Length: 383
Image (cartoon, rainbow, N blue to C red):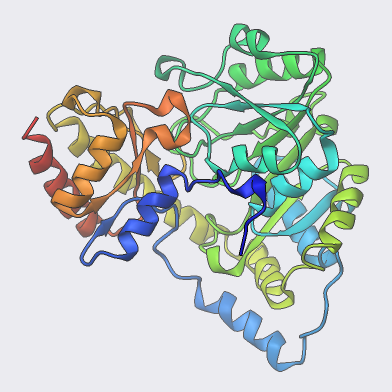
């Protein structure tokens, strides 16, 4: 069967190629996937099961159940002082559903969206898939992989419509400072842009503090604040994300989603509402464990030949510089996988600014992380 021409040149990203390779191998220590190794808490599962047994198995409201939207509002006000009305919330099929709907609602054909490197790989395809044009903004590690105003001004054109922010960042794990985000906010207001602020890792901060971009004066009306329960509440398989945005944007996203999914799984929504209302202490406890893992892995990486790793800041990712080995990101990744059976993601999968780096997800037990580091240390001795 012949594919549409628009898909004839589609190739899997560096991240997907690693995932596909692992599926065909045995005994791999997998540091490539950004999924918590903790299972969903049993009481969250019980909550969903209870509603299933009670016959709660029908179509949901397109925007999401009111109680779930209220739980999201309460969670963000409780943790970050961000205030929103439930009418300003849309419940999505995981976090990745949000950019598709957002760009579909906001972009005209040819509109440009600034994409800060290193960036989460799917963003680029989502911008293109909704008729937009991604404009990559190169960044430097010494600036915490955050763009300067000069870098933004150099990339801006009259076609620029918006910008994607992602802090704590995937893949680098960096946390942008309030000063950096305030400078970006001034630029956004000056150029009349929208912001998609992906804050899915807001609960995992190990250095500094999380800045909710929509809390910066003048930004709430310009910002789509995206998050979900996948990382914070270990509910990746439940596929629940949510976004805060102006009501007219939410309404359009609902219309678009009605042609795609016709709502989000009813039982997952019930579980998510319960999780956001009851699990704060467990979220903090898991974040502490991730922080301990990252510090231990960071120390091991910095003792390896040819490797340098910045201190852990947020999310559960480390982004070590492996250029001292003399290998490219791709060479390091594939040789490490084939020789040592340790899986990481090449930094260039996240844009040109990621070349010379690899992404490590600290989502295994401490014991397995240390085994991975033993294997990687022996691997690096060859260079």
